[in-house]
Length: 309
Image 1 (tube, one colour):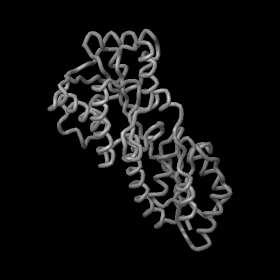
Image 2 (image 1 turned 90 degrees about the horizontal axis):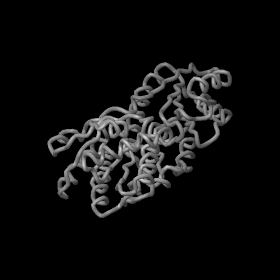
Image 3 (image 1 turned 180 degrees about the vertical axis):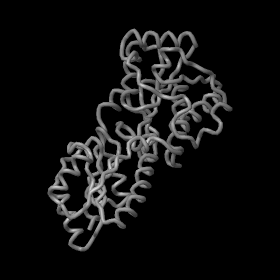
């Protein structure tokens, strides 16, 4: 997000605008936490994780009264155009805000590690989250191989399995469990038994937190009863995936989209989320961006199974 903020501020200055930052998202907009931002204010933040503007959920913004206060803040500070960064909740909030106050201009940037917004191949933060998970599993493999253990690693993904799937492929996991597909414990046991028969003493299974099996602890109980050969250990990576320095891919993506958002606002665009599809910057209406996300690539799912031989 910091890379996006930096690009927004400097592109706005380049086009002759006076950019301001709103702290704590919609909650800060309601409270009037607005501060002018200069080129120096965003210097040295490209490599930093998190966001210098901080973020937060806002129950008040879900009410008409809260959105009215937010609108009054914009009027008080003479803010005519707004760029929001976040996931589906941020986009839905922006859509409702525009429906009530159509004189505003609002564009969104897809900032969510889950990669679950329609209209973009990648969301800001996804690549970094996957790389952090892969690094953690690479380290776990050393222990798994030395001790002859089966590790079940839970990664984020409440409604979407993109982090789990990409992590599984990149780390050479033996299996992956994601919300978009039913969990087949018989198939997992077959994979483990096949490895056991060729004297494979360790395995890694990646589990998305939203998988219907119910998280790594439930998966572990199921597998312990069906496959007693392995000593099973569970690891929940949790919010570790949300921190750390962003990858080059995320920095470039955020920079492109941040600068493009200012340019599109300058040209009169509003009511849409920016994305990158096959290398091209696109605009997707907020209403469409939040309704669904593309399914996981079936070939990647098949690869996890094939390459676990």
